[in-house]
Image (tube, rainbow, N blue to C red; front, side, top):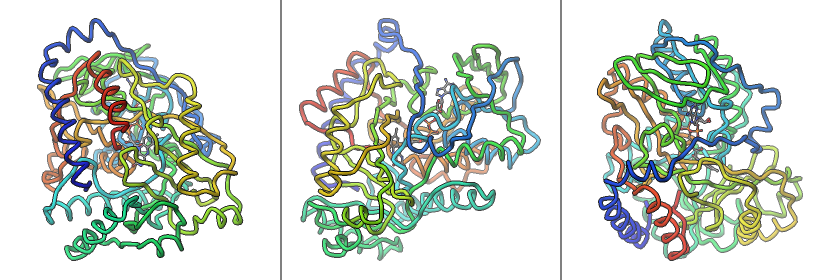
Length: 473
Ligand SMILES: Cc1cc2nc3c(=O)[nH]c(=O)nc-3n(C[C@H](O)[C@H](O)[C@H](O)COP(=O)(O)OP(=O)(O)OC[C@H]3O[C@@H](n4cnc5c(N)ncnc54)[C@H](O)[C@@H]3O)c2cc1C
């Protein structure tokens, strides 16, 4: 649900990229030879990861094994699939292979916003809107249910988030839209400037869309505290085990540094890293997004900042800025400027060094919204890799000649909810009992092609430098 201008811009950009994709699609094999790529995975140094101090990654796979289902990747997608699948099929052998440590990827490094809705879905169809809302709010309920069921030590809050509007016109338009959403049974509230200020005193905003039931989640804690539960459910977890190669067949071979897995079916749960396995290279590109966390604020600092209620906010700009507040007072902030996102030549999946100027710019953006944030001390700074698709849409489904390669990826900035839902969706697709998902926009969704290198990098540079904008995640 973006403004008309943004939609027009997206159409023009989309058309440009689609045109160049058509011209260059035949060059994929050549590009892969000239610009060889490799999987790079750096350490997770996020605030979220520091809240799992006792976590030690497990042993790698050392001898070859067989599996009914082998899951590649230990983020929300992989772990939620392992969780739901092993409950549904306790008799099947489930193996999870993670290149480094569980929650080392985006799931343990994000902004923490646990949101409704799906990126890339532009519709006025009440049925579709209700369906998407029910799926995503149900996805958040499911996360909470799992935390409670297993009494997990996971910091989360569900006291709602807002999207703030930086123009009076967009705020008023949203106001009318929210009333319409309410009329079709979708909850939400419009906050005018005064109401918002009492809860969240942000400068330069004209109104906000409050979405109750959404919130903030520490993803590293969720995933890592689920490890013993998965093991209890019979899942074999191998960390420090990158899959180097996949050979498809009715039985699939996964090659890892020390051993192989022969699996009847696999799950690609590798989101931004998936292209390195030779899948979805034309559909997704890894985008690096930078985030920082402040020292915990004292009650006086919180009051001075003007953040009195709610888990977080995001704004309505292309260079979307998003922020959440942990219960113990750390402000988590990401985005807000062109520098806070980057695409690196040859689809690199690790950001080299620390982007100091990006962090400086990001603090400036936070100051524009909250002038009193100027004196806050930054305690953590990190970068993460997420998968972006041309239309920002995600997809969950199955592919391959033998229909045994399952996947879920491309969530943009909405993966906290969606990638946790993915495990249930993929388990249902595997079982054939997936009627409830067939009308969802992510079910076996097609992606628009993005050209290979060097056109991909050139396209990103042209787009961001000429327009001064970043892709809205
Ligand atoms: C900085 C940042 C901020 C974000 N903010 C938000 C937010 O506030 N709200 C929101 O909803 N979403 C947000 N997102 C997006 C969200 O975090 C992701 O969509 C989601 O975590 C994806 O989960 P995943 O399990 O599919 O992928 P990941 O969490 O990336 O997990 C993939 C895993 O696969 C492993 N892997 C990769 N290749 C291999 C291989 N060959 N062999 C074995 N293992 C492999 C990786 O090490 C990794 O652990 C953000 C993302 C980033 C990076």
